[in-house]
Image 1: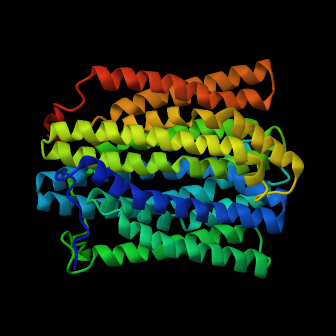
Image 2: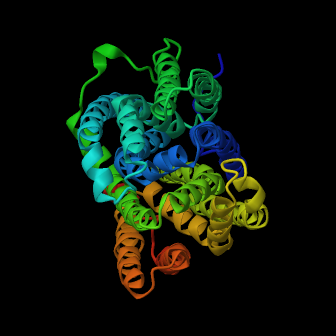
Length: 450
C-alpha cells in the first residue's frame, strides 16, 4: 500500500506545495459547502429569521473553536519538524499527545459552550426575535463540538505528514451526509434550526471515525495506538509553544469579529441575514488562502527541520504569490457576481442589496488578507508563532475594535463597519512585508527546538 506520508524536503518545491495545496483546497471547498448548506437550507425553508439566528452565532463559534484549532496547528508544526528531521519516535509521541489534548479540549469546550450560550448571545446584542433559535442552534452545535475538535486534530496530523488527500476523501463523504441530513431534517421533517447543527455534528463525527481508523491501521508508518495515548510533557510544551500563539491569534481575531457582529446586530434581522450571507460566501474566497497557508506551514517546517534553508525560502515565495493571485481573482468574481450569489440564500431584495454592498466594499482587498495569512504561515512553520500573534493582536483586534467603537459613535452606518477589514488588512500587510524581508526568519530555527 502506498504510504500516506509525503517528504517535502526533496523534489520541486512548487510541485510539492501545489500538490499538497490542491487536495486541501478541495477539502476546504467541501467543508465550506457543508457549512454553507446549513445557512442555505435554513434560509430557504425556514425564512430570514432562522437565517439570522444561524448567522448571528457564526462569529461566536469561530471565537471559541479557533483557539483549539491553533493548538492543533502547534502540534502539526512539531510533527512536521520531527518528520523532516527523520525522528520517528518524536513524531509518534507528538501524535499521541495531540489526540489526548484535543479530546480534553473538546470536552471542555462543549461544557463551556452549552452552559454560557444564552449569556454570550445576549451580551452580543442578538436581536430578541432571533435569540431563542440562535440559542437552540448554538447549544446543539456545542453539544457535539468534540467531533469538530478531534477532526481538526486528525487533519493536522495527516497534513503535517504531507498527507492532504485522505482528509479530502473523508470530508467528501461527510459533506454529502450533511447536505442530505439538512434536507431530511429541515425540508422533510420540518424540524427547527437546531436540526442543522445536529446534521453538522453527525457529519463531522463520520469524518473523525474515518480519520481515527486510518491513523490506527497496522500498516501506517506512524500508527496511533490506543495503549500509548498519554500526554508527553516535552511534546505538550512544544504544542503550547507553537500552538498557543496561534490559538490566541485566532481567538483575538474571533473576538474582534464578535464585536463587529454585535454592532451588526444593532441594525436588525435583515442586516444580520445579509451579513451572514456575505460571510458564508466570503468563506469561499478564503479557501485559496487556507490551502496554500497550510501547505506553507508544513513545507517550511519540514524543510527547516531538515536544514534545507534555501528550499524553505524558495517554496515560501511561491506559496505567498499563489495565495495572493488566487484570492484576488476570487475577489473580482465576488465583486461582479454577488447579487446573483446572494439569491441562493434569500429572495428578500434588501438582504441581497446589503450583502452586495458589503462584498463590493471588501472583496477587492482579498490579496492583502492573503499576504498577511501566507507570511504568518511561513513564520509559524519557522517556529516564530509569536510574531503573527503580536501583529494580529495589535492590528486585527485592538486597532479594529478601537476603530469600530469610535466610528460607530461618529456615524452609525454599515459602510464604516465594512471599512474595518480592508483598513486592518492593509496595515498588517505592511508590517509583515517589512518583517519578512528584513529579518532572518530562517536561521536560528534549531534554537527554537530546544
